[in-house]
Image (tube, rainbow, N blue to C red):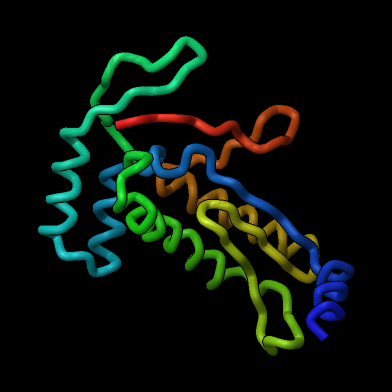
Length: 167
């Protein structure tokens, strides 16, 4: 049964994909603070984590070895235990806009429309037609830019490269 539903979705759905380049590090701290306030995170918690992040230093891994330490001016540091959860709050703003504006694809087994599926910062968007997919991508792009984030694709259309940073 599940296989048949998958085959139907593969034949009928119009998919689109998005990958946020260097997602944790691209979160703008001021926007992050406002999103956390909107999501109900206590102000003291946001301020404490921001103070820790503002005082942390990082190093980039390059072909020539590690760089000299530098102060993180923006982002949720890669490797920080809070970064996945804090970044998910940022993604929830984008996911909410897509959910409200874009109807998605109807899975018969679920008996409801599903506009998006996510794994970490990688999203797939499924619709019934190209016009709805265009609306979905426009919504994704606009809310992403408003949040100060980037969707990065190489000139050849492939996924962005991994960026290694240490702190």
